Image (cartoon, rainbow, N blue to C red; front, side, top):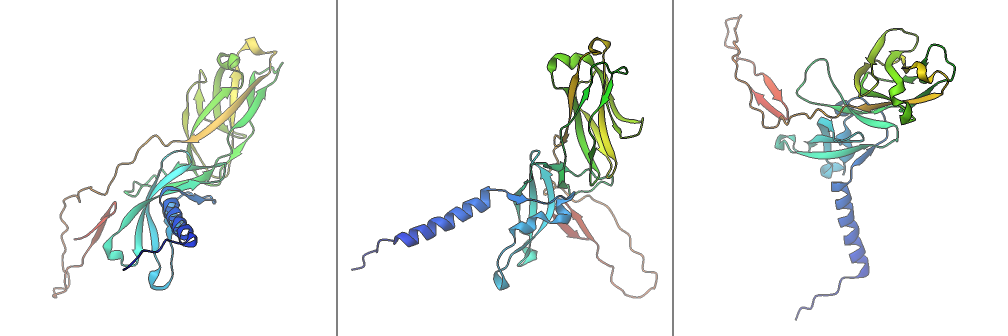
Length: 268
């Protein structure tokens, strides 16, 4: 008569370890420690690669979007083994360094594959309008960017009692009199395109009533993740006609054209 044996302590620990690894792999995001502007070009999904030989698995990144200021969600395509299965799954990735944030990539040329990156933002920057400052203007310390970036800008008084005493605020390139944004009164946020390289600063103008008072302020920057990208996986291929003219007069077959929209590819 067969009697099941009691599992050993070692086997229980081994099984628990395997289950824990699976749970962590599914629910915890992968940490990203470097700075980049494109998750697609960086191929963040390669963090899911594993195995070797016939058991190896390789992934490429189809698209990415920010879930919040630190975390991104990417669509990962398994290109080995058997890419013809067109198997995809989502992966979460964390911009791990404290001053790295998830930033949507807004391209000047429209694309169906939305994208995002992890970029360094040294925020906040501070400044003080000193007591007795005759022109009532003060500017913050400077901030530079290693790559072009679009951010939301907000300037606030450290002491809320002086909020109404800041009559105007602006953001400009250091050494330039041209403002990238100006708010009067200094409330709300402004969207700004920053270039790579130059140093930018925030400036405030205060009321005469605080001429003899120190007014400290800070300049905050954050990614604009409010715009949600639509899911393109179920998008219908648009209808159109392509006419092919054989100039040589022979029986060459009409060439096939590959059309990719979102995660779908069609030969036409």
